[in-house]
Length: 120
Image (cartoon, rainbow, N blue to C red; front, side, top):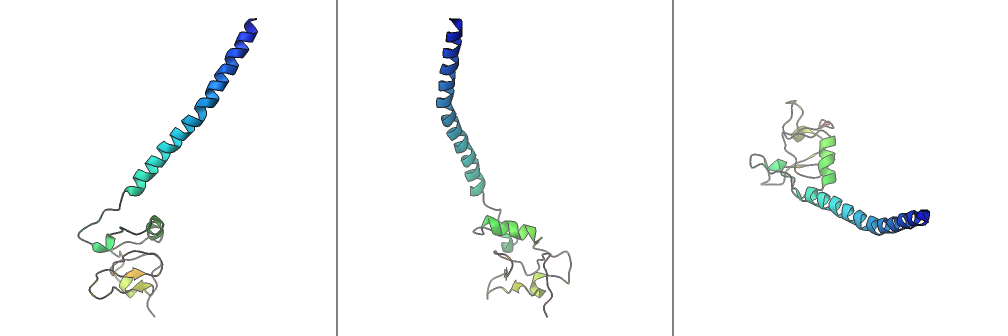
């Protein structure tokens, strides 16, 4: 007789857990997406000293690509700067920053990346 009660209790607990599991799963998914949303809403810092470091509006994929190519806004090698690189797009008239054929976003003429190629 006691075995039937144990079985009944076990089945009842299983039923309760099956009702709670989807709700808990939705709650966890909601918590995860809230964190992603908060991280996605963070914008890169804009420095007034160098407008070529302003990456607002640049997709995260392109920001990561810049990092993977080792781009820096000030070249550590004086003879290898973006303004004497074959891949550099000169700034438009009145603008301080140019561009690059490899990635999106503003590029400092004094910048550098690992794919620097001399102008021929």
